[in-house]
Amino acid sequence: MATAPELPFQVVLDDHGPGLYRHLVGVLGPHDGADCYQEAVVAALRAWPPRHDGNLRAWLFTIAHRKVIDAARARSRRPVPVAELPAAATEMVAVGGDGGDLWAAVRRLPAKQRVAVALRHGEDWAYPDIAAALGCSEAAARQSVKAGLDRLRQEGWS
Amino acid sequence: MAPDDDGAAMDHDQESAEPAVSAGLRATLLAGPPVNDSDAEVATGAALARADAEGLVEVAVGSVDSPIGALRLAATTAGLVRIGFPRDEDRFADELARDLSPRVVRLAARIDPIRRQLDEYFAGRRRHFDLEVDWALVRGFRRRTLQLLAAEVAYGRTVSYLELATAVGSPRATRAVGTAMAVNPVPVVVPCHRVLRTGGGLGGYAGGLDTKRWLLAFEGRPASD
Image (cartoon, rainbow over all chains, first blue to last red; front, side, top):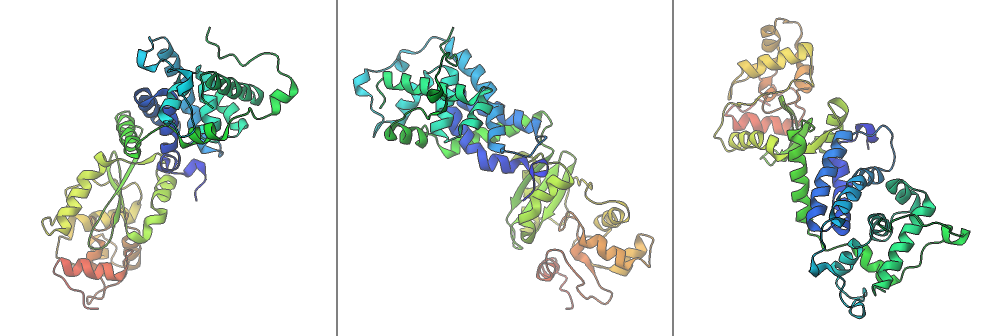
């Protein structure tokens, strides 16, 4: 197998494209997620190959992450549709429930908490990689995950 | 200010411990949001079309099914640059990345015209390929020899290594002509299967002698061995 500088970009798309798409739909919703995915793929191809071998999934997600934060902030400035307001907390239980509703709750989190929770528990990333993707310390990444999970619990997700 | 600050005073335990999460919540998060695989493919196709419009797709790849197996195809913006036999499949993309550019992606828009002409050829409806060829993968004497072959030796005809060497101006270079055929980056389209030994022997073929024999018979020129 070729090392990163000579690896065909298609291999990165095959290995990590579907995971990135799912992650972005999770944190941004179907429409903004698909837009952000396209922008990230174009930006990644423009930057390909990276200067150093390493974790290509983290490299790709980190390129996407700046666009996630931008898109999330743009979205937070728009009025929230009534349908996306939290339902009664007593009706929301994650176990056996609709994952789509849980992800709608994730998308109501502040951008950094949302990405941190999605990377830690949606993608099973380790904290050093989350910290790199968020551009923060590992401790701060843990704190973002904790704050996001606390908020989800306050909304009734257990 | 949105409450996405990192949080201020944390004691050591909070900094190093995994924040608690229930098994049920984690399982639901790990399952991901509801997504169709086909949606991801559509988004990837749209992204690569945008990237191509920006000139970022240096090598497009695809494939075409044929009676001699699935052929891998590659094209730059200059034209068809490589055709690979099934035996080349594992290293096809890696070699393009090494020899041309690592910006290799599947891009149907650039591959489809090539695929169509090969389909027509194998259906018996095309005897001459009307495709731009990017010769970037072969140089000098080898490139000149392959270009002469493509221009002069039509469907259903054959030529000997010696005749081709003579035609390219180096009648003693039959071995070098054989090497040029062996490294032909675009077999079938540049018809190195039409080059035989003096007397009609098969000689060699990068796609295997059975493939060479099949192509010659298909074009109505069965080989003598």
